[in-house]
Length: 206
Image (cartoon, rainbow, N blue to C red):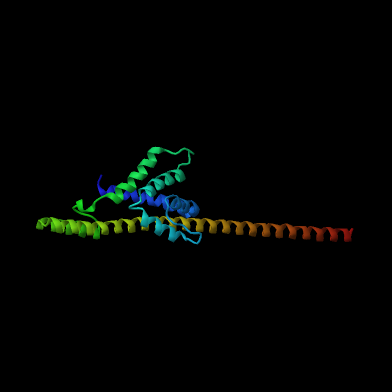
């Protein structure tokens, strides 16, 4: 599977995870704890995300737990679909395991990585090629971690924004309802006073 497809699948998975995290930070904290990643009562969402992303590339247990967690939180049929869990795991595994040095082209720094390793290979220096590949492999992981973190944070912020807008709309609707009740009450009260005055005037003239 070419990396472009793997990359898009990982973005979608991080987006799902970010939406969950925005609504349920506690469960995300439990996820990290289950993977033996330290969590603290004072942790902010940003702290948890940073720790999660830092561990994800090399922690297969965290990949498995994430795959299950996303399926559990997004499947509303109350039954876990094992196939979806496997798919989620494969997305994470393939994304972080993919060797970008095998790509003729990649994006941004990735292009330089593949190009540099290719140039060394053309020189025929096997030892130097190995060192270059190891060096750029580490950079490759850093890039993937950064991209995953950006997608995760973006989804969290978008969800928070949606919640803020919903709360704002609910407050506006409540304010309008209160306003209409006040106006309605004032009109009824005014009509009652007018009716009382008319009654008293008629009674006086009777």
